Length: 242
Ligand SMILES: Nc1ncnc2c1ncn2[C@@H]1O[C@H](COP(=O)(O)OP(=O)(O)O)[C@@H](O)[C@H]1O
Ligand SMILES: [Mg+2]
Image (cartoon, rainbow, N blue to C red):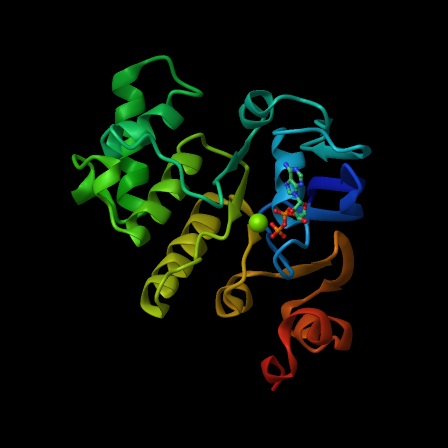
């Protein structure tokens, strides 16, 4: 195993609020790493810093041997980090397939080749039969999978997923878990997963980072983290341990 992503002492302040407070962790190639914590803990802000949406105020981020902090989101994506958005935002008037073709064009100028790749990705996400629908016609579970398809079409080494199970029923959650496990296993794509749905975290993640008020309060295996008293008190509640 080699280190794919290193986040070292990253902070972000919004006016008076310290949204991310000196967070440090590493993700190995091919690992599924989860970030959990209550609403407002700084999870999406941390993602946005990694993805180049905005810069952190301090700290270093190394991806695949190269420093990436301060790069634009396009440059970060071209280097191999694909991300979804917590609030899904496909191009609503485009077809499902064309939404994915846009991602596939990142590394291809040939539209026919991009379309072939997009269809391959759509099949993996169980969306092939819906490829001709407009994105706005999809149900929430389908839209969530379209978000993952759009990110995956850019052929990332690291996939950043921001609450892709939120609002899903248990059967849809299990379907997403199975798809993500397949993508990880078959393509060796590492995944950084922000997630509230603990059953998905427990099923997928090799390690879990817990954020609270921007700071990391625990980092370890899922089993260790859910038994950590500080995590139970700040986030999970006593009923989650058992
Ligand atoms: N663009 C922004 N401007 C000002 N405050 C923000 C901005 N984005 C997030 N915040 C604040 O930063 C904190 C962390 O937010 P966020 O990263 O979205 O948390 P999480 O994803 O863990 O719910 C929250 O208090 C939120 O209100
Ligand atoms: Mg968030």
